[in-house]
Image 1 (cartoon, one colour):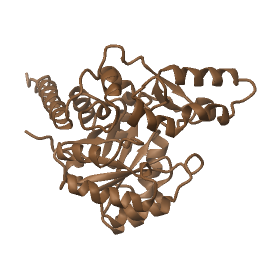
Image 2: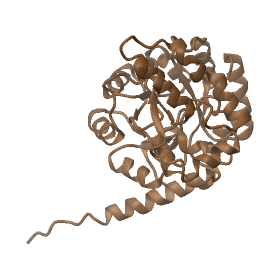
Image 3: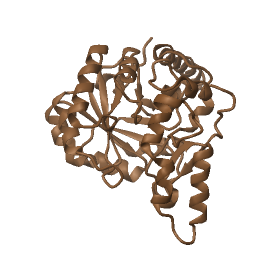
Length: 337
């Protein structure tokens, strides 16, 4: 029996699972595999080098799936100078099912997206940002716990999903999607029980057959060595906290940040380690998970295999249904005696 929620109804998808945006990974192969499995696949807009390249990737995705998919647009002009207006225009004109806006204020692009029938989801790392996004007129809110593969965190925002989701579902009047180290049906069931309409997963989808990354990385993620303790948070000294895999590169970054506690940290000292091209080379060429900074949530500790997206999504939904049934069995009517 399928799980019907506000998310599945709003987007016309079978299962309440979204694949999060992932730089250099969210391509047509990845997005179409998740959509074909019944979830919502997401193309990562800035993985494409220009708005025209994104349009071509959207067209390519449509040759791989007839089901709904979306586009992630992460707005970080200070870190990533890009033609954001151009990317947004393409997303709207191509009428994808949904745009996931992260980083910046979604207000600028909401009228454009709605003009073309595109649903707008805002990825909010705090309740205050979620409330602002709701006032701006978005259609859905994705709340992100600190255990997730966060990016751009500010001091004081270190709040986990257990609190974030409970507060969001009690505070907001829009459908809420839970994001934060999700990888199992148990977590989907918990999110639905707390009032969410679905979950977003990114790290978990890296370890799938269809993910367009080197097999060595997938094998490592599914190994016993890669547990929930194998992440750390870098760039916090620059108010841009980012959860990444704990490896030689990110440990060196933490050393540099620690040395600069009193004098201040210059991003130029960290840039060689945080360079996106270094990460891209790891994903596509070397598979050396120890030689790059790459986003990774604590859900890595819940990964034990490398299934297809279809097997993974169906397994998560089946487990969620079982857990929801068990929870429902705990509810008994009060005796009238």
